[in-house]
Length: 273
Image (cartoon, rainbow, N blue to C red; front, top):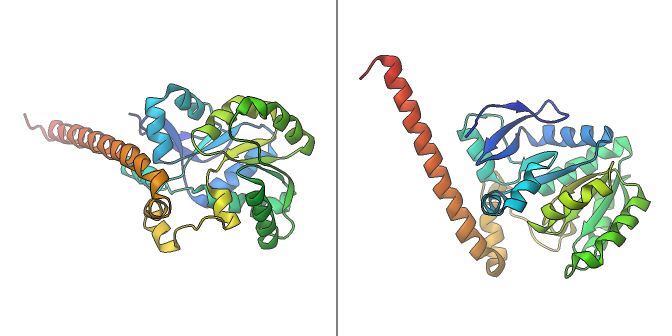
């Protein structure tokens, strides 16, 4: 596993490898600047918000891994992912939560007159989301919203692409849930270029107020997952039992090998047999 830092595409930000996935390594504020710079460069592409679920599912599903690999940027949307980056030696790595990145870009984008589209969720959620964002961030340009049916992608994607292109957005915020949104972005981002597509999962619900987000202290402590589990136990219990457990096992194995390797290197340096 490589732990070397490398320049992120089109940005001075750094990245670090976590279980074969190249993740952005930096602060939330620098991530917001990174997105705005990408948008204003008109290069298109898409960004993935990678939490433990996405990271570990990508280990088992090659098509998802390819979708993540093909992204312009992969942000660590999960305290455990950012924690692992720091354990691998990237001290500056912070969690970049989807709701936080979205709000930061919407805010900073007002000075650039960036045009935003919200794609996914439901009509009722999109209506509340738009109202609340415009109340909170005066002057933000939301040029379109679309809640296509979830049942059959083939029945709505072509129509959605045509509608989105007619709005001429700079950024498309996508909330289809993982891994569906990652697969959609890999397939369709090229068709909505030069807009940048960002998959933000539950961010629509949090900002619309249809779901409650964890208190700030839980977010800072890396316990937002626990709040979500209590809020949606039926949907999330199996996911957390499988992917979080797999993550912990993988972390233990990687850090054990790393400690063993460092110990051998120290012994050689000291001349011990």
